[in-house]
Image (cartoon, rainbow, N blue to C red; front, side):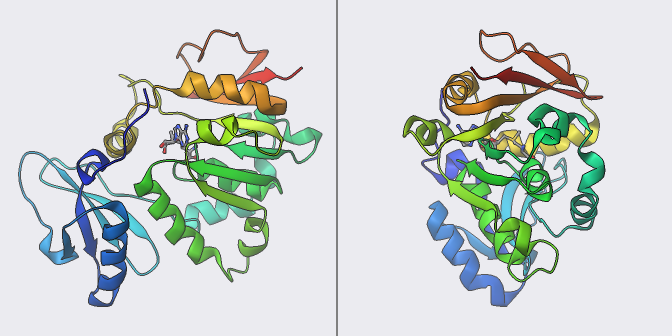
Length: 269
Ligand SMILES: C[S@@+](CC[C@H](N)C(=O)[O-])C[C@H]1O[C@@H](n2cnc3c(N)ncnc32)[C@H](O)[C@@H]1O
């Protein structure tokens, strides 16, 4: 079943806040795009209480998803320039032999990749670091807002601007995109939301709590896999928790296992 992103209620967002008064117009613009009516200064959004409420906070360089309340998990953001991400980007060649690189077959060349579940863009950023042409698709309007802000920060960046020229970002549903017979891709990459994991670390659980609150469980992921299999020229790669069952009916041709996740690889033809 597809999630419905029709109202602020369903986004799971309480409203939009601005970190500084000069960010207020941008906060209003984003709220209007998302159909949200509450826009406040960030110092006015303290909501102590048992339950937490999720706010989208406009900061000068990024948007932040900030849960407020006494039991709230930590904030989540998308920032391609963030220190650890930039470090990983600049040292990406060392990661070619890691499970993700093996799964997409990076040693055989630089494939054209469809990242159909873009999320917070971590995997997209790695594909770009390896020199791939990437189409990244995200359907959650809140995450799309995070992407737009993050991409605006890449403009003119000495390290990121050039490789990011190989990126096309689309705010749509990948199922619709694939069903509309797009240009072919060598690799279709899927990282849908996982079934809830009992043994996940506390930090992962907290980030996932915020994420799941916004995007649900991606219950249509096997439909996406079926379409991916029709369109990928070389392979479809599905990221799964290490012990989760495979997605869909077909067994993968092979699996690449990491410490907590594995990649199921379905070869074309
Ligand atoms: C687990 S996250 C992906 C994380 C991502 N690989 C990263 O590195 O940040 C899954 C994301 O895929 C998105 N998604 C799931 N199915 C989709 C579809 N059919 N079209 C577009 N986006 C989809 C969800 O909204 C969610 O943001």
